[in-house]
Each structure stands twice: as C-alpha cells, then as structure tokens.
Length: 155
Length: 155
DNA sequence: TACTGAAATAAGAAATTTTCTTAATAATGA
DNA sequence: TCATTATTAAGAAAATTTCTTATTTCAGTA
Image (cartoon, rainbow over all chains, first blue to last red):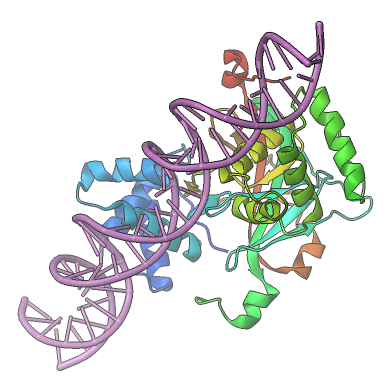
C-alpha cells in the first residue's frame, strides 16, 4: 500500500495525479477539486459537505459527480470511507468480536478473537475525545466467493 | 457492560426482557419479534432484511417500527450497529489511524496510534474470509462536548 | 497542434433509505 | 379495571444514493 504523504496540499495533489495515472484514472478538474477539498479538511466530510465546498470553486458540479468520484477514489485506494457504504447492518451478538466486510458484495462475516488473544487494544489516547461505549473493528476486503467470481474489476 | 449470553434464543429473549425493564423500555410484541429475528440470524441483516423476516409472523408491522426499534435497541446497548448510522464520511489521510465517532452528534475524530505502538493487530483468522484491503477501526462513544451539553439522555 | 475514441460529466429523473406526523393501540403501574 | 404514557401503523415526506442520456473533456496519436 502506497500513501500520499505530505502536509502541503499541492504536494498531495501531485502525488494524487501520479496515483491516478498509475491506475489509469483520468485527471479531471472535478477530481482534483474533490481531492483538494478532502485533503484540506480535517472534518471527515460527508458527500454533501464535499459538494458544498467544491461548489464554491466549481458551481456547476453535480452531486452525482461527488458520489461517483468519491466511490472511485475509494476503490482506487486514494481516499478512505469511514464506515459502511450505504445500508445499516445489525448484530445481536454483543460478545467481543469484529467483522470482515466484503467490498464487492457487502457480505458481513463474524471474526472472533482467539483464545487468550486480547479482543481490542483500547488505546488510552482515545479517552481524549470522549467516553468509549463500544468498539467497531471492520476489515474490508474481497471475500473468497467474489474473488473467485472475478467480480474484482481492477488490479 | 452486560451481555446476553446464551445460544438458545428464548433464553436470550428472557434476558432481553430483563434488560428492557432495567432501562424502562416497554416490552412490546414488535420488539420481541425484532429481537428474535436478529438473534436467530447470523447474517447481520439490514433493516429491510429484518423487516422481511418479522413480517412473516407479523404482517402489519411497519418498516418505520423496524427503524425505530433497532435504533432504540442500539441506544440501549442490546444490539450492535455495524458501521455508521446513515451518511458516508470520507478521509483523504491514508496513514494508519482510527476514528472516534460520537454517537450523539456524529462527529468524527482522528486517533493516531502512539509511537512504537502497533497500528493494527491483524488477526490471522481474518484471512479465512478473504483478502483484507484496509482496516476500519471505530470507537463509538460520547464526545466531551455532547457529554457537557447533557445530550446524553439515558444512563 | 489537431484529431479520435473512450471515459467522465451535468442535468434531471428515479430509486433507495430513513425519518416524520398523526391518530390509534397497547403496556405498565395503580 | 383504569389511566397514563410509550409505542405503533399508515402514509407522507425528507434525505441519501444511483441511474439515464446527451454533452464535454481527457489522453494518446498522428
């Protein structure tokens, strides 16, 4: 995995362009603006929030483009999506465990920590932000079935 | 934290009733059916999926009730929501870190692992399910601001 | 630099997911 | 049993996400 490492946005943008070329994604102004907006923000903005930011420089951009672009950037590994794609999923099992989520089919699998293995290493600096009520650890990837089915388009 | 521990659904239901009483939630047939459906499933069902299951025994139940009930159960700590509540959130920072998500206001905070601390203990049994592309570790709780504002209704 | 094919976009509609409003129903405690 | 109050059904409405089609723009090549 290759990260874009820089605190200066335009350096990140340069790195972003390279990554786009490497993954044969066209470098459009829309993509650049969206990436800039996201890079400049510490707020983990929602789609709507990105839309509002980008709109200022690019008034004719459509919301759909934000959705498409963020999704394709996620797929390309350029940005990170916090949480699940769209629909909520529930679990009645509250014993400590985590989940493997398939990025292709959306299937969710339980992963139980092994005997003696510490379930969750709760880092104490988390308390800085508030009181933790529960932990949600997801591993995102491609499940065996989708891998076999060759649904995995890119790579 | 108190877990409902049993492999037999009706035992879980009994425990669920107690928890409801303890948190002064009324024990309605709808809630019982929804809890049963979720307990019986290993599929981490979506709201729609729960709706379809419960409908079989209770044809007049409304989708809205499923939403309300799952949310209040989550709030009461009886069921677990995989992922975020509704809207997607994005992050352009791909250096390994995790998130503190406020259950009240939805705010997302970055948490960076300390120097020398292993970022993510990737348990090898995860590979059983597929190839991991990235890790999404969220700590859910109440941020200081919401705590102060007393938005924290229950407890 | 102009040309070409393919990918990406805007616009608006449409689908999906989630929440709200109101009146009726049902659970709890007296 | 009764009264109180939370919960529900029904349907509307809001919010979020995806799709369709025609147009534009990128990137590679002449």
